Amino acid sequence: MSGIGRYILQRLLLTIPMLFILLTVVFLILRVMPGDPVTAILGGRNVSPELMAEYRHKMGVDRPIPVQFVDYLSDIVRGDFGNSYSTSKPVVSEIFLRFPATLELAFFGLIFAWVFGFGTGLLAAVWADRPLDHAVRIFHIGSFAVPLFWLGLMLQVIFAVKLGWLPVATRVGGRIAFTFQAKTGFYLFDAIMSGNGKVIADVAKHLVLPSVTLGFAQAGLLGRMTRASMLEVLDADYVTTARAKGAKERVVIMSHALRNAFIPIVTVFGLQFAILMGGAVLTETVFSWPGIASFLVRSIEARDWPAIQGAIVFIAIFISLINLIVDITYSFIDPRVRY
Amino acid sequence: MVRGLIKGLGWIADKMSRSRHAMRRQTILKIGLVVVIIFLVVTALAQYSWFTPYSPTKYRDAPRLQGPSLQHLMGTDQLQRDVFSRVLAGGKASLIVAFGAVALSMSIGSVLGWISGFTGGMLDRVLSLTMDAIYSFPSMILAITLVAMFGAGLGPMIWAVGFVYIPTYFRVTRAEVLQVRETTYVEAVRALGASKFRIIVRHVAPNTVNAIMAVSSFNLADAILTVAALSFLGFGLPPPAPDWGYDIQNGQKFLQSGSWWLITFPGVMIIALSLGFGLIGEGISDLVNPKRKRKRV
Image (cartoon, rainbow over all chains, first blue to last red; front, side, top):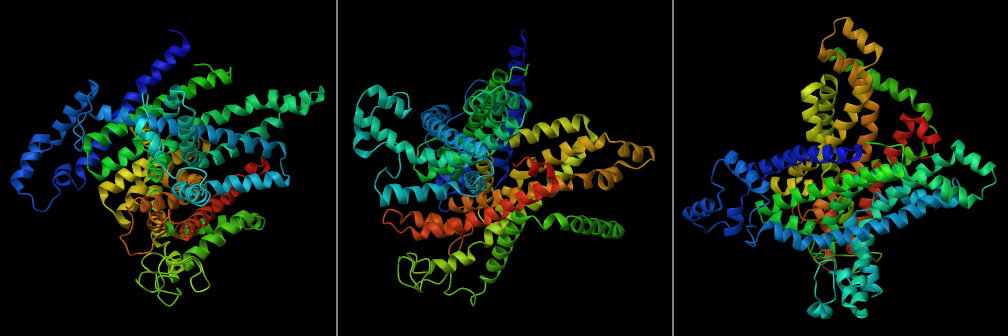
């Protein structure tokens, strides 16, 4: 098998023990900690112990934990994540119903983060140690300290409540929601397919504030990395050579420096995605965005064990895949990297 | 044991006096330290009723939902309490949980990192894989899951947030240990017949302290945000205790009516405190690694 094919296979095999460990940890925590789904479903107090026991038996949570675990694992291997306790529907379909919303949000959040972060980082590096650089660096460091949920609320106050330019929350406006057909679940794509200008504008407007909120912290980190990496590359001998040859500064930066400066930035992309999914919990909560992250929080509150386990495993698989893709992209940007 | 403790303290004092020269130019570090100390003092004092202009918890102590004025610098909330007084006292949970969680994860994570890195073998492989599995998962989601299971309150939050950060310390210390392990002096000590425990505690661990210190300040900055988020989602102190995250959640209900002061001011406090810890982290990183500064990172 060729190098890259073998590498991908190796990596995929390595994710299996990682997922297994994560699943074991979550499974144990859920069962060892106080609070069980039966109490959450029946609402507690005035329920007879017999009824509780009957429910426990029906849901299979009265069996020994190791038995439950083996059972659950063998179901998962067959792609069956069980049924949600709260909706009685298969967890897999609940997840796939909500995942496009999260993915759409993450995608546009990342676009904002890259454009904004990369742009500011590049500006700061080119004008290093000038006032613009100082201002950008203060902004970069400061952006780590801003709580996402607060930023989201402030944007709502300013742009939705005070100025009225953009909608406060949700994915699509009330009137349009009645007739809107979500075929793929990616609303912007669906809107464009419908060909209705009004619908497209409405969906796009709903995307702005959540994307900016989610992308903000990433923008700071990316900007900082871009600046540092760019400065390092600009000091390199080959850049001096390019300048000595008489290449224009714009050409030196855009075609000589940028590509090499990109390498370390892409590496963090994988880790970024994990942080991004964490940020999605808060962004989805603040903007009533019906995605997988807010689904997970609601499932946790309802002690919906199959839903919690399913969502966590799903998020973990997704992040591993992203990391794999990042590592493969790496070898395209830097031809010296071989697997 | 006592002798070891005295020696340890002497070592820290020595480190500090040697770094005093460098400190003189460390404006970033100084600003960060001043901010954090102000927050610690104000939050501690604000727990006493004579310090805050109004009571942070008493209902009907002020007009209802009024914007900032001279009497109420940051306005009032729907239960007729003074927002300024609540903001002054609202950092208690954040500070306790942040320090508690970082102390917890630092001690567990570093010890595991020392042992794992130094011993190697099967133990190292299993621990590394476990830590990587936890590390690659979104920490915010993990913290929420844990705190929801443990129940609300300060203790559960310390455990939840602390657990999430363990892999960070594990990775940092393990990486350092792997380097130190191969040095000649460790080989020499081993040749002298020192026990594994002695080598780890006396010769390997001290070399990882610099890295741990820098990581922990950034960690504190992040912990402040995580705690705020947990409180915002309703897993923090029970009301009516003043708390920034909870107060922002409360303010969200009155956002549509334009009561911006309810969320703005607690948020600014969170930013300032987290930024304070972040600046300390920047400063320490510059001290520990002077090359970093030259690179203008």
